[in-house]
Structures are given as structure tokens and as C-alpha cells.
Image 1 (cartoon, helix red, strand yellow):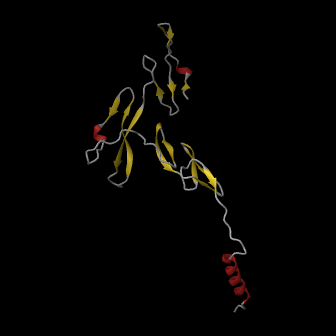
Image 2: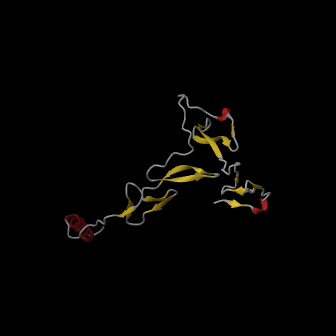
Image 3: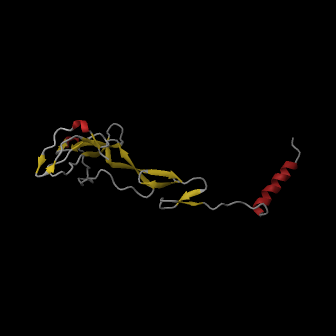
Length: 175
């Protein structure tokens, strides 16, 4: 969904019998949307590099560049794996079964996969949902089933023995 700011309407020249309006459009993240002469939208990308923090020994994504009207990147900020093998150049991998996407602020196209709890199923690509009392998710985590109710019959051996012991102990004098 695009938000059109009509107050930013500058000019609308007629070119080749087509009306081309130049105005400011903001996307949901508040970034300005631009178009080329053919009317195609210009891409906007944030380039991340997965790096180890030397102080804490934890890994995190670090912004090393941006693409908007061209590449703006500092290669000195990029850390390459010691193996010399090229790293993957996608911002997010597809989520596994039982995982949902959590988008990062400012980036609606990139996400982090989050594993749903054992008792939850994947309602949609962004939401884990509790199956509810007496229900459990199928292995594919797309829906839930009713758990079989299991109970002990009072006339079974497994019920009679504990009841007999408890009754006998109750009848013993205390003290």
C-alpha cells in the first residue's frame, strides 16, 4: 500500500499523449518511492554482512551498504569467511517447517525465522498460534488435532492397588 502525499505535487507535463505526474510517494517504511522514465519503480536494498563481534564473540548482521539509485558500499566493512568461499547473497533464507517470519524494522523484504513453541502451529507466514487445550500440532505444523483422552478406570488393577494402600494407611492410627 502506497501513501501519496498530494501536497508534494510539483508538475504534470503531457508527454507523448501520456500524462506523467511527478509527486512524492512514501512506502510503509516512510521511504520515498521513485520511478524511472519508463515508469518502473527503482529498487531500494539494504546490504548486510553476517559478522562476529570480536568483543562479545556473538554474531550479528551489520549494514555494509545500500542500493538506491546506485550502489553505496564500503568494502572495508565487509568481512569474508576465512575459507574464501563466497557467502550467500540473499537477505533471508526460507523458513523451515514450524517457523514464522519476523521482519526487521525498515526492511519489509527481509526477515528472521523464529521457531514456534512445541504446542503452536503456523497460522500464516508471520504468526504462531496456540493449538488450545487438549490439542496438539501435526508434524507439518499447519494445523492441530484433538489429543486422545486417556484415563484410568477405577476397577483396573492399576487403580485398585493404590486405592487399597491409601485406604490401609488412612486406617492406621497416627502417632
